[in-house]
Image (cartoon, rainbow, N blue to C red):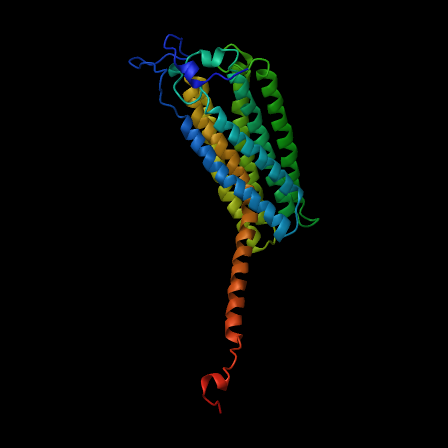
Length: 335
């Protein structure tokens, strides 16, 4: 079926609105102010940062270290999911229904059978936790590759394998529950519907799980680094991951706050914007975080290559043999 365009849905001033405006505020179906461009701008910026990061990681593993591991392939899968989620968000926020205040959106944007608005939103609800899980799985696998270097690192193995098992179970349960509650009727505005009454709490629990799992993943390198005799390079890599992970954790906390606001306010189209931005930043930062060690290797290798070329050029100039000019051309006898 054809999509409902903004022109078709926002032009009839006699349509009922999706929300009730505050006292003294007039409805505007023609050209309402929207937060949607904010999301689109964030998405474009995040893709510009994420895609080169994961491409550099794969280049480093394939061409420089020549040691591609399972964590690299899982990270690549996570990046594909995250970029898909981010690109899909650009499309979603380019359609009517997301960004303006609810009283500036005709109700038909949500209720018209051909709009399929809530079905599209359900796809983001499923793609987001899958992306988050795969990115965190890749980071745990990277820990296993980096820190578990001997048979005696039982503590490191326990932390990592326990984390993989728990994350797989918890995220799997949340994804199944989201589908069970929202797939039959994905309406997010019906307060008596299963997606609102049951799917909403699942979304909050997912955000809380993201925070707890972020803290757990951040704690692993802190505990292990001080217990292992590691090189300075590996320790610096762990610290870099820690700092980037802290930023992602703060974003997860903000995401939970905004998700709760969506449930308590009657302006979902407006309030979903900061929540969406936090979710997008969180998963994209996760991908970049996974790529930091490889980025460090890439820049170090590039710097070394430039230094070698400069050194070789200097040696050539220092040892270059300048041929003597024949006497017949100069008229001067060299004695």
